[in-house]
Image (cartoon, rainbow, N blue to C red; front, side):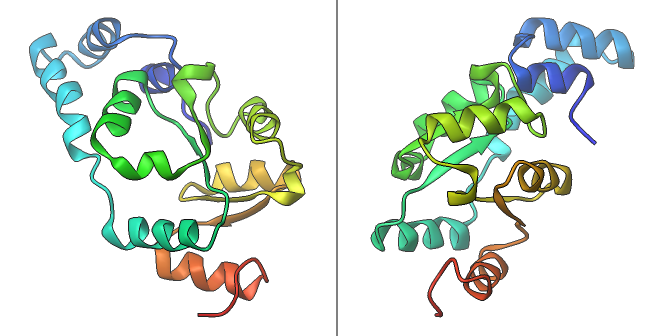
Length: 165
């Protein structure tokens, strides 16, 4: 249900790129340079979804407080911050590698609520991975599975978190 193994350790920030490449090469039998090329290309695949960015902009314009909680290795987190201006729209955020915990671990949610200075019942959490949503709910967060912006907007409106569109 969680993220384990080499990539889980990378998300957690307990393994760096050179060690990750060597671990994956040993485990898979792939050449280290092949693994390195894949690891290096991942940030290029982290492309924003226009509909979601637009919705975030609308929420921001409405004065909603925005926070993020993301499983993300440090080099990719730095890439996202550098390449995507909308990351600055968030009041605060947590990238897993920077706190050494990953979703769906209880500790990352507890840390997020403390950093965001909000009770879990005051927070809305959306994630595309059901175990993360289940953990958030178990800790008192209002949590929804995110499939796309229109679905999330409709679900939040139906739950009373947003006004109707």
